[in-house]
Image (cartoon, rainbow, N blue to C red; front, side, top):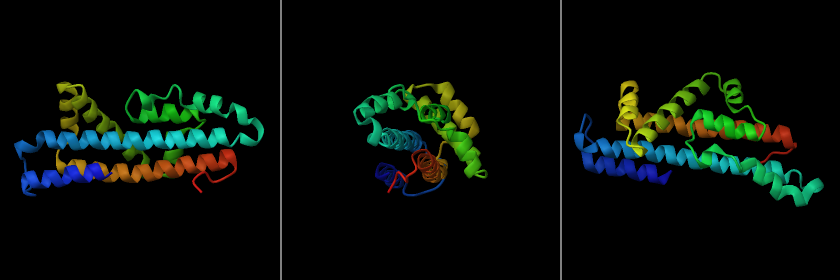
Length: 184
């Protein structure tokens, strides 16, 4: 997530690290949110690729020639390739792998799972507002949270913890499914 750090550094240079509302930073703040959404989506797509590969290659001793067919089937209709990494799309894509992603997250992280869901939904509302030049979506996002550097930093922290948690849940599922730890 070096790109995110560089955006925060630029933000500090523009503002002189002063707090408060600074009109010149509004679009820079929005760029931070969009970049965070993009980084998270890339993580989720990579994790889904790794999980699909682990499932397909776990069949190798029995069905080696069919592995490419199985792998293609597991990633072909993936929402992460055409939509956002919002909670619904994540749940849908990992369901293709046989997972109940959000149920598993809530079971393992009862105090955090719902917070992750809300932050991811909010992040994608901002992302869609910016990417589609949708003033109504941006206003919806602003009513819920100020789109400031402080909110970005808070959401980035939450997303960082969520990525670790999601990775742990996927790892546990794959270990149970395949009988081996996938990340070793």
